[in-house]
Amino acid sequence: MNTERLFNRVAFGAVLALALLWLAPLAWTLATSLRSNQDIAVDPTVWYSGITFESYEAIIDGGNLGTWYLNSTVTAVLTTLLTVAFGSLAGFALSRMRFRGRRALTTFILAGVMIPPQVLMIPQFKLLAATGTLDSFAAVVLPQVPNAIAVVVFKQFFDNMPGELVEAARIDGASWWHVYSRIFLPLARSAVSAVSIFTFVWTWNNFLWPLLATTSPDMMTLPVGLATVQEAYGVNFSQLMASAVLGGLPLLVVFLLFQRRITEGIAGAGLK
Image (cartoon, rainbow, N blue to C red; front, side, top):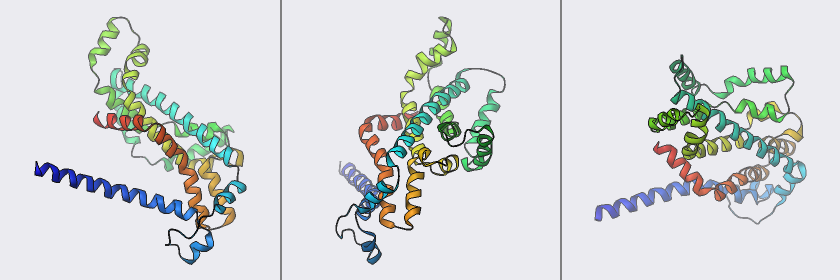
C-alpha cells in the first residue's frame, strides 16, 4: 500500500511538472502580449508592468483578421474531411482487399512517411502554376490532403478488426463499399477522431505551403496574414506574442468544446 501511494505521488509530481513546463510559456506569451513594446525593451523578463491591448488593436487594424480566420477554418475543415475520406478508403483497401501489388503499394506508402513534405513543395507549386489554380482554396487544400500517416493509422486499425465481419457481410451479398461505409467506418470512430485532430491542427498551423500558394490578402490563412502584419511593423515582440495568442485561440476553443472526443480518439488509436 505504501508503495502504491509513493508511486501515485511520484506520478502526480511528474504530471504536474510537465503541465507547468507546458503552461509557463503560454502564460508568458499572454503576459507579454499585454505589455507595451517599450516596457519589453526595458526589461523583457518582467511578467507584469501594466495591461495594454495596443498590440491586439494594431494587428486587427493592420490586417483583415476576419477573412484570415474564415480562410483558415475553411482550409482546415476541407483538408480534414478529404484526408479522413481518402485515408480511410486507402487504409481499408490495403487492409481487407486482395489485389496484385498490394504489399508493394503498402511499402511505398510507408516509405512516404519518411519523405519531408517540403521536398514536394516545388513540384506541387509548378503543377498548380501550370494549371492556373494558385491563390485559391484548391491550391491550399489539395496538396495537403495526401497523408501517408493517415493511411497507416486506418490500415492498422482495420487490420485489428475481426475478419468475420467482412466474411459475413460478403456472404450476405454486401458490396465492398457497403462493408466499408456501413460496418468498418462506423466502428473506426477513434481512428477517425485521431486523424481528424492531428490533420486539423497541422493544417491550421501550417505556414509554409499557404505562403507559397497564396498571394492576395483575401486568400491568406491566419498564420500567413499575421506574419504580413508583423513584417509591416518590424520586430515587435508584443505584437509577435499577440499574434501567437490570436493564432492559437481557435485551437484552444476547439479543444475545450471537443475535449472528451479528442481524448477518446487519441486513447483509442493508441490502444489499437
